Length: 87
Image (cartoon, rainbow, N blue to C red; front, side, top):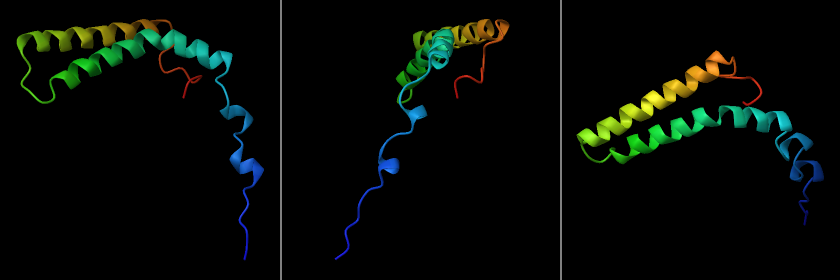
């Protein structure tokens, strides 16, 4: 009978897999307005998946799209949108 043992290196996470770096957290914090705007837009779109959108739903989606565009524009004007720090 042959026993199969685990290799320690394969089981233990590599050093870079443990915690986000300070630069990663700063980049996420900087992009948080765009992330939250995207979440709000998704929430509005998900709410009307199984029914026809009412005029109130349409307004909510339009406002959420505008917030996404504003947040992305602000990041782009700062030169931070799509930053390579956060993949």
